[in-house]
Length: 165
Image 1 (cartoon, rainbow, N blue to C red):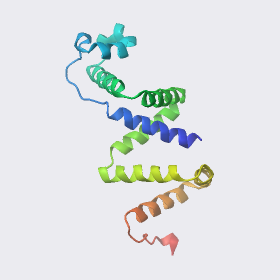
Image 2 (image 1 turned 180 degrees about the horizontal axis):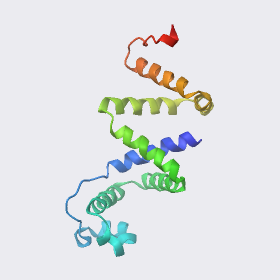
Image 3 (image 1 turned 120 degrees about the vertical axis):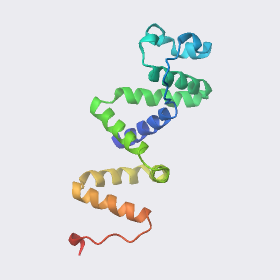
Image 4 (image 1 turned 135 degrees about the vertical axis):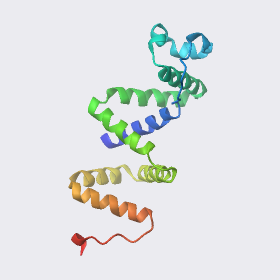
């Protein structure tokens, strides 16, 4: 359950990444469209105190929000509620995983997304069994499993290690 929530939150972070913009100049409240201002109204009083980067991210996020269908907005609201319910350590873990994902090559990101889709297609019972199996593994066993998964993805034979011989 917790891993599934973290995966959903990672997906939400990926969604937010699309809204990130690098801005050098602040975004004036008056330059926002009326619709953007309606979405961002809770921030109106402190808009000028926000960093230029945050203003740009929020303006882009408001644009994305306005383009969403009602069902997409419900999903986004639920994901945000989940995010807010996480403990700080859980948020840090998700953010670190997200940063790690951002540092991957496009091919690596494609593989992560495909693995996630494959995992989601498994039955709930099978996913739970795999989570429990992973949690019971030692750090060394997890490292070995990760390496084997990478070897399989690269379509190369597994490396022979002294401990394996």
